[in-house]
Length: 378
Length: 232
Image (cartoon, rainbow over the protein chains, first blue to last red):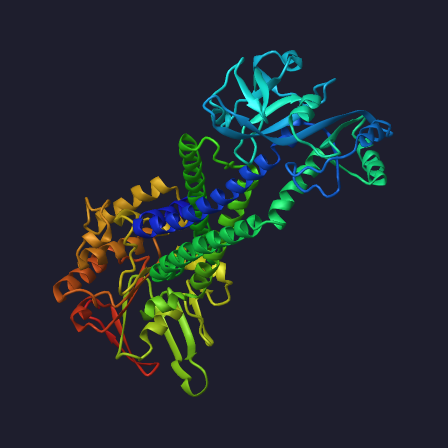
C-alpha cells in the first residue's frame, strides 16, 4: 500500500499550484482558529490570575461574585464561621482592591493591592529579591515583576512611593504564575495594612481562603457555606465561573464563536473547493486507474491520504505561524495575552480533520461515480 | 482450433432509459485468440468501443457471457474484476490518459504499483519497458515534454508493464499523424504481440489494416463481417 500512498503523494504535491492553494486554505484557517482561541485562553488565564497565584483550594465568597476582581466584602464573622466548619483545616482572609500609586515623577498609576493574612501570609508570592518577613516592616509592599512592572518605574528594593497618599516602601520583588488581566501592576502587603491604606466599606474580607482537611471535605464545606448564605468554590470551579462570566455575560464568547466559525468556513471553502477542482481535473486519470485495475477502496485511500496529508501539514504550519506571531507580538507587547493550550490545539485539529473529511467526501463521491467506460467513450 | 483467449457469446447491451433507450450491442458473439491482432472496425456508434469495454471487464453486459481463458468474467465481484483487469488486461487509451504530474517512468510503473510492487523496483522495471518502446533516457521527463507518438509509446509501455495476456487498444492512431500511427502499430505487432498474448484494436484507420491478423466489422451493434487482415 505504500506505493499507492506514494503515488497519491506525488499526484498531490507535484501539482504545486493546487497544493499551495490547499495548504494556504487550511493553514490560514488553523492560524485564525488557534489565534482566536489562544487569545481567549490567555485572557481567561489572566482573568483568573489571582486565583491561580494565591493557590487556595477553596474560596468562600459572596454568591453575587462573578469574577475575582469584582469582590463583595464579607463581614468578619464569616471568617470565624468558616474556621468552625467541619472539614476545615484552616481558613484565612484575603483582601484585594485597587489603589493609586504616585510615582517619583509625579505621575499616578493604578495598582492592584492584595492583602495577605497577617499571621500566615497564605498565598504569598515567590520572592526573587528581598525577604518575606520584611513585609511586616513599616509601609512595606512587595511588587510583582511582570510585564506591568515597568509601569511603576522599574522599582527596586528600597524604592519609596505613595499609595493612596500613604507612604509605601518596596521591600521585595516577586514573581507569580500569571499576571492580571487589566494591565496594572500588583502589590502584595499584609491584610491589616491593606485595610489601612485602601478605602474600604463596612465589610472588608474579599475572600476566605480555605484548606480542607481532606479533598473529600470540600463538598461538606461547600454545603456549610451555602447554609451560611455564602458560596464556596474549589479553585477550578472558581476559574470556570470566571471563564463562564466572560463567555456568557460579555461579548467575548460570541465574538470568539463567530471568529472560529468564520475561520472554519474560510478554510473549508478554500480547501474544499480547491480539492474538489483537483479531483475534477484528475477525474479521467482516476477513471484510467480504475480501468487499469485499481479498486474503489484504493482510490478512496488515495484521496483520504491526500486530504489528511494536506490537513496535517496545514495544521502544523498554522500552529507554527501562530506561535511565531505570539512570540513576535510579545517582543513589542510584553503583556500580550495569548496562550496556546492543548485545548486550542485539539479544537484546531478537529476542525482540520472536518475540513479534510468534507473535502474528501465530495472528491470520493465523484471518483466512485466515474466509470472506466467513460474513459473509453472520452 | 486452439482455445480462444476471449470468447463472447450473445452479448447484449442497452444504454439510456425510456424513449432514449438504445441497444448498443445486439447479441454479439466473438472469439479472439492468442497470437492474433484482432481489429474491430466500423462507423461511429456501431458499438465497437462498447464491445471492447464488455470484453475487457469494464462494462457489464445486460445479457450474454464473456469468458477469458475459459473463465467467465462477469460472474466476478467488483474487486475480483479489478484484479482480473490488473493481471490480465493492458489498456492503451485513445487519449493516452497519462498523469502529467508524474514522470514517464512513474506513469509506466502504475500497474506494478497497483500490484503492490516496491516503488523503487517498479520504477526500475518501468524504465526497462520504456527502453523496450524506444524511449531510453526519457524516464525522468514528464509526458508533456514528449511528442504525441512518444506519449503513445509511454501508454503502450504502461499497458505491457503488467505483462497482460490481452492488450486493448482504443483508436491507437487517432491522435497521431499517419506515419507515426503506422510506426506505432507496426512496433506493437513486432515487439508486443506473441503467442501468449492477444491484441484487440478498435480503429477507424484503414492505413494500419496491414498489421491485422483478422478484422471484424460492426454496424448498429452487430458484427457484419470478418476479414483476414494484411498480416494473415
